[in-house]
Length: 363
Image 1: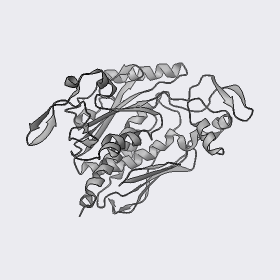
Image 2: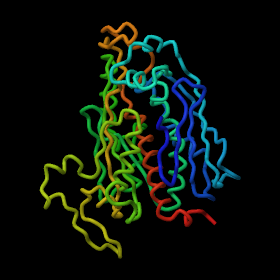
Image 3: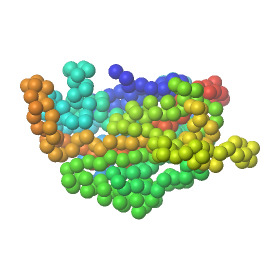
Image 4: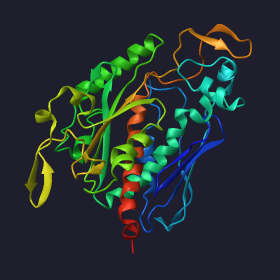
């Protein structure tokens, strides 16, 4: 199975939705950097379920650091992060052993493995993103030492849109949300909440888009063609369950523009080369150009909905109907915002390590 990513910074994720625990191992972290465990826990807590807007499953998600730190600093050894599972109800999933849920990995995992852990989706579950948040939260703190900041927000929930940040002048201050909802606009946050609750009241779900910016990533990172900045970010982002699309800069909207509209003109600013616009999303030819790396990740509506759905019985080889039980998010986008940040942080640090691995070790 594929449960790891990264080239210079290797990240492995382990566990299942209903196993005793989940976790991550991060190998290749530069040594000598302090990790604030309270700050790390606060970052991971942003992913936890929110009353009314998320699953009724309540997990503490307390991060235990098993190895990789000495006197509060990274020491060069693999960093092992451990999170216990507690609030599980495996009986809710007994029926889906032979009746796969539409748009889940139930059927494809059956086709691949045959014998599998179907409880809560097993190792295909969004539950494992808690481990990604733990790993990414560490990377986020290390990136701060090099002036690199990663921030994200819910740009869209269903048909409701938040205000987009300025892709040229985006700042870390832009990601101080005015409410407890991860939107830049308080008004948009209320409308997004209403959209989620509306879908929930109809036993349905809704998807959306997360917009993210990596600020002050140095120019020159990345490789041409198949190992570019966009390639690395996109490959890792698609590891987040339910991500169905990733675009950079002007993205698909840029296809409707002319070159005179989409090109980013260069200019000098206090000794640094910058661009007047950022339709490229901070990347040219696969290589970072020093502008903010801006991308958006599209999330499909949560596949588990509380309505009868057509499926098949794999044992009886006949068509049938399925009514899903359990506790599920009517919209995963809210909780996915820190997950997108986490993956972006890990990817950015991986790119930095590739450029100057020895120089990053603190002396």
